[in-house]
Image 1 (cartoon, rainbow, N blue to C red):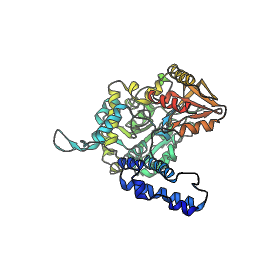
Image 2 (cartoon, one colour; image 1 turned 180 degrees about the horizontal axis):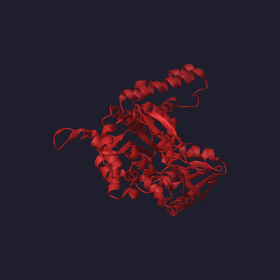
Image 3 (cartoon, rainbow, N blue to C red; image 1 turned 30 degrees about the vertical axis):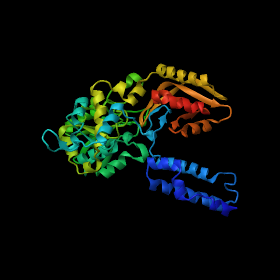
Image 4 (spheres, one colour; image 1 turned 60 degrees about the horizontal axis):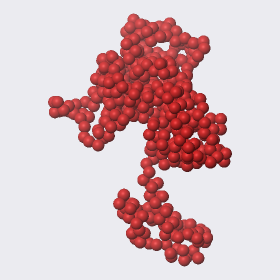
Length: 462
């Protein structure tokens, strides 16, 4: 019986002439589809040989066409895919952190699909420098003398330490020896930079006198690290930036502040406390600061270094800069993002700032409207409620700042919360929700309006 089935399998050339195969050829190439067909036929033959009952009740040609389509679609699907973030974690590191503003995305496409003046001075008709892009905007927004861009904040910290302190000592509080994402630790970054760590104080208490006693002829830098992803509370003490700047000026030592998330606007009116504004640190006298581009700034992945002209110029000339520099796409997206700050429309146009500043009442109205739409259609065994909840800033930022929100809570008489969550993730555009108290919850704070339709379709498909 299996031999008969094997003989009935159409040839590759015959299958290539079928309408389904011809459509795929139009969307790719004949050789690409031929290879997919060969793989499909090998799979079918193997199944027939392993079981005499295989395909007994099945039209083999139809089954081959079905598998060919599925394999073709899978082979063309990119590994890096769009998802809908319905988790309520605004800066979700696993989901790519800050989505770009439309203006930044448009600028990126414009530069990506054309030649550009990346290292060319149009006015003079000769070679230019890539690292001047965005500098003028950063100087205006931050009030600094100079700025340069690396590929992330870890790179920025590495560059600053290597340039300003290699072979010398860097004084840092024990309470600031943090670990950031994926196991990167400040002491290890410092070691790789060639600087020597000089710890002062204790985990919970460090005084200005600890820094003062630690300064010696080998001291090159005082490092202050904003603890973005954790807080020590209770019996604590930490010198202010003003105190460190005053001491550093007395001893003629630069102060480098790693700000981590990089706020360009004050977010405290929206419930996000203790995230320093970059321009304030510079105004208080920090010699150099660094911060991320794809966190609270809301732009592309980047590490921005800003501060005194002489120090930034030294960093710019570091040979490591070439290994850690950014490309034209980053510059284009970052410049467009910074322009929104300059124009005074960042809170309205940058997605993460829009999400962070959204009120609970705004989100509740959206949640109720979506729930009422779903209930109007009617889904058997499904229960929907709008409940109070909390959103998180995420991305290692503002760990104590939970934002009040309204959540859509889903439960089903025949499906578990894990089943529902898995169903949402299996959609053509995966929907990433979270589970609380054995219920799936959807937080529209991190969902743009246009994505609500996909959530509607996903839920009624239950």
